[in-house]
Amino acid sequence: LNAPFTSLWNQRIANYVFDCCIMHGIDTGIMILQRAVWAVLGYDYVQDDGVLGSKTLAAVQQAGFLLVYALAAERANYC
View 1 (cartoon, rainbow, N blue to C red):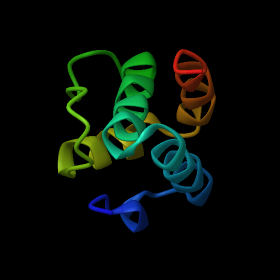
View 2 (cartoon, rainbow, N blue to C red):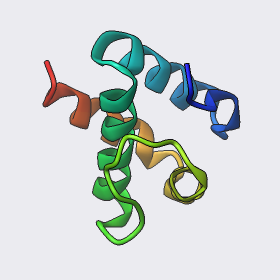
View 3 (cartoon, rainbow, N blue to C red):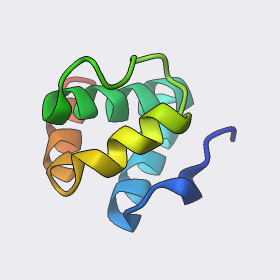
View 4 (tube, rainbow, N blue to C red):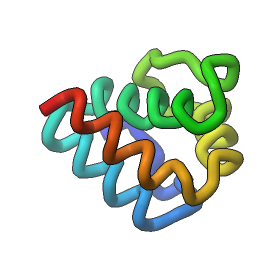
């Protein structure tokens, strides 16, 4: 597993993203997170490339608690 889940600032978000990666695959799970960031911050912050890198981690922290709700909404698109 090549995703630094321990780097996510919020345990609830880390658990949710980990579950997304288990259920949908690592790349898709990270893309769900990145698209949830889009919903909160806009498209300019991250690309949906499926990589949990430094830009995505910074954007996750900046998105704050609203990301929890955006994650649920974005994941619903993959069910």
